[in-house]
Length: 125
Length: 141
Image 1: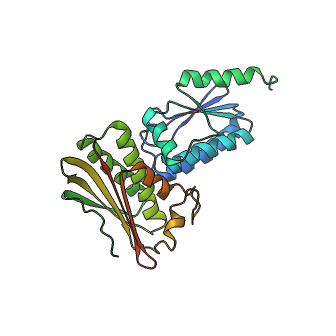
Image 2: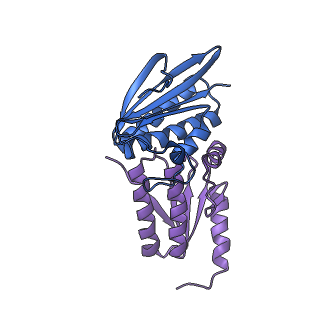
Image 3: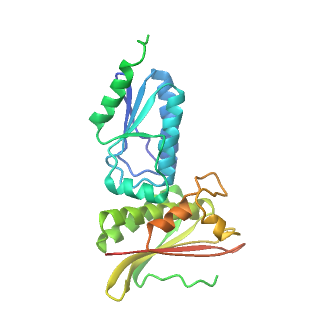
């Protein structure tokens, strides 16, 4: 039995902090959950915190890239925060540089990026 | 199959790879051995990532199989070797399979080629119709 990764909402931002060992099925469910929650909540930003994630392989890397692309289509920006240095080195060597994925070193910086983006948009609702 | 994949020498373990759960367990086992032989954090991360790619290949393309893993010694060096074995369809064109971006399934085509870049030693032995064996080793510096 696998657990879903919780998706939290703070203002216009959805926050996902991955604290579990990622099994492929969990990764796919998270991708679907996020797309649904963006539409349901009208969120304009998504932060995925991978501070606790020890490895990002091509499957998880693809999920990050796909999630970023899906959320862009749903009018939300994704920022991946907290990547460990060893994970960054490994990903690049693996051949995945996650070109389309915005990253920030910390959760705070990630939220800053999303807040700045919001002020450049016309007021919503 | 005829290859000369290294066999982990002392106290190696064999674990099944027949579900997503097993891939996670294989990863954890490789990590604990990498820590035991004092690989640097970056090297641990590279090896575990390679193991994750190869375990998934064993499951998805090989139809399941096993991983044998253990510490190895050469001269005064210590390392971790992990061997992934399946009795699946085999790989008809190895060069193609080791090319970045080429995939026979729905993946990114980085698993095999990427895993090779992440480790020190890499051997691939495959026969169409009888299976594939991939052995990887990372040595402590």
